[in-house]
Length: 221
Image (cartoon, rainbow, N blue to C red; front, side, top):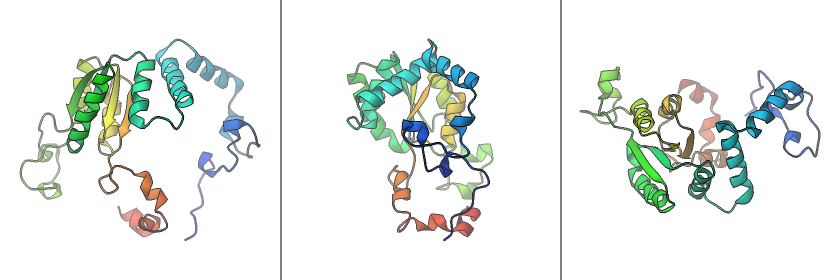
């Protein structure tokens, strides 16, 4: 199957990545080269200043550099939270991952953090109440819709310093991030088919998941 031609040229079309190590060359069209000195200086000031963005940027870079390929994502989250001075961690969890969340809570408390958890079904609003047809439910009867806005509001009320996403659905995670007041990091992403490891689809694109290259199928989803 021929690869589709891009409408525009952006970083996914680059083969140089000189922006990373500056050990090759920039392509003819490049966002790095198009960056004005003033814009670049503003970004350096943003990341190098005293505000929250600077604190998050430096903490993330420190964890990456100090523990590169040594810590798993859970341990990195602990290290990151500590470096930004977080004390109270919020967890927005899917009901399907509540057992994993309980383990996470034990780990975070052992690390010295307070935790607050909000389950996706909190509020118990039936899907039909928001306009979802009964036949589009997973099972008939009362089936609560996910409530990421309430999850965010509950954690906002608890004044969390950092929120952790535990397997919220595609789109529900967008709503949570949109309404959360504290910074958000993702620990687990929802993928029911691939055991919450969506990257596996890329690694099996020539075999098990080659259906993803079916243009007609993709456009009918």
